Length: 65
Image (cartoon, rainbow, N blue to C red):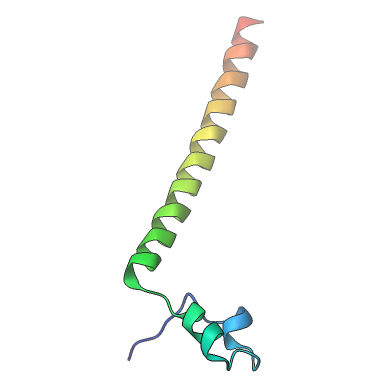
């Protein structure tokens, strides 16, 4: 069974989403899913590296004092 989990919930599962234009926008291709995962992981990696950088900066500033 194929389940399109990215478009579940929200506007795509509402009763108002019966029109052909909105249902066409709710479809998700494999490349789009891969792009979503890649962007999400990239954002998490960016956030983690910025937190590590701030912690190292504070540690270095405390060491200098």
